[in-house]
Image (cartoon, rainbow, N blue to C red; front, side, top):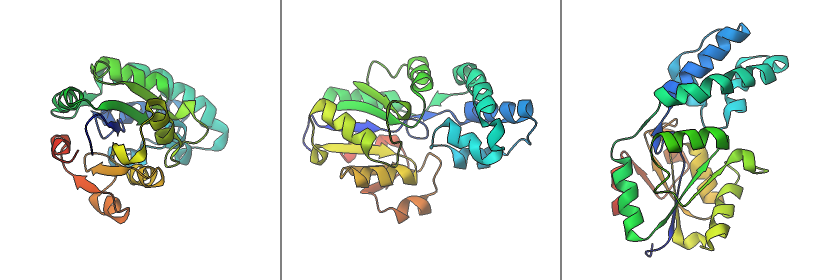
Length: 212
């Protein structure tokens, strides 16, 4: 890809490890609404579809709206102590920024919580744009989120890379016709990622600098 292209990142599982905060908020919500707590691995595997869809399979429909309010109230605080960057994230972003790439985030998280993470972990100085699922008609794996970011920067798919960690990220990238690089640091297994045939699968974010 030529310099001064666009690199779009997913947030959770790609740049940020917020799984402890998600697990804490999830199980707090289950306790408050009278449902059983769940194991961290099961919660982790359900992340990536937005918070409403995270909770939905584990409780009755009549309790979903109340549970979502409880989850979000708790999560605003849990993110402050239960999230961290993956190793070398800031160094990689600084390198890419210095090389002249536009950098953006495309997340199914609600904007409010994505912003909390980005400010808390000091990602904002490197990012040119953040777009979240609550601002769109369609969430990932629909390609709308990537298409809108490319449109904002007037950059075509052949000059865009999308970096994610879930099979739905690979699907999103393919549908948007962009080069898609998947990390094994998130919610999907390597086998799940391989089935989607992304451009590359990498184990660490630092490997990205050799691929763009």
